[in-house]
Image (cartoon, rainbow, N blue to C red):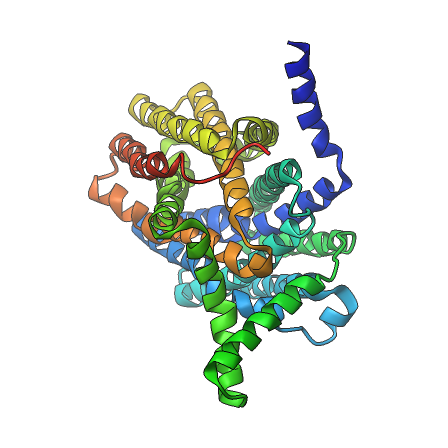
Length: 457
């Protein structure tokens, strides 16, 4: 008994590593843009009188996250003038994307949604592209903080990355909602536009914090990529501008894909991809419409901020850390089965809330349960794909797997508003449907469970 207890304590002590604090910040930098293009944008459009369908379809801008692997190779190699030399390759890219997001917020502060909806969504798309591009570098820098042979530290790092992401998203959401409500109560007509300027200050602060995240130059990664290019050039039989370009494209895009299928085999690789694509679709459908549901059922921005953002953040932090320990000890496969079952049960709680009407207690229970589920599911998912990547193609291969996972959550979930409208606003049935959406991914996971070697190492 004492041996088991000590083992849990040892697992918990992994979080004391200073690298975990750096990973926490990287996660926050990655999560914060979702405050802008998810909850803030959705509520802004809702309060401007736009329809649920419009809000749902506006979520198509998230689709860029599903395709960021396409330009990941460029981000792995292209250096940013001045920034790369001064800050490092990874940090230089992050700062550039943060500057683009900051400028986009300034532009948003001058836009009237009802008069310039197309422009507003276009700027939202720019933020999404910058955020998706930033994620490529953030994930690579996060994985490269941990040595490839440190399995427990990788699981702990995945947990800290998730905590950081939710910290950026939840606490950023608290600041956004309370700031918007403050400006609204002060009588500021364009209170959301003013709020975005305040959020810009948070971006500046996060960039200051980024300067404390160390970046090391991985010569092995660069040399291995160049060696792959040379092998392809040798097979092409000549050395000129065209063959160099073909070798570059094939080596940086085709190399990671070939490596993944070669490592796992065709059947298992397809099973992994199916699971990654389907795993969080039900949660995404619920999440895309949740803030609209809260507003329609009668909750104020302050109540949404307290329960969905503030209280939810505390719950997420605690259970993500516990989820990291579970992933370290039980393995990511078992943790994801557990999280999948929780997802289904949690969505049913939202259905009960819809059927019984406004209840602050039930609202708090539903939100907390949803955050617990998201914590376990996300940390297991991040650890799963982090352990799958080949260090030669860290940014590209992780971006590919993460993009496939994002594709299901973004492209399909964009029809969530239209589904609610098709159901004539029957939120209860909508949440039951999101429960059923969990099942296909668990079927894929069942078939590959014994063939994917991912465990508590």
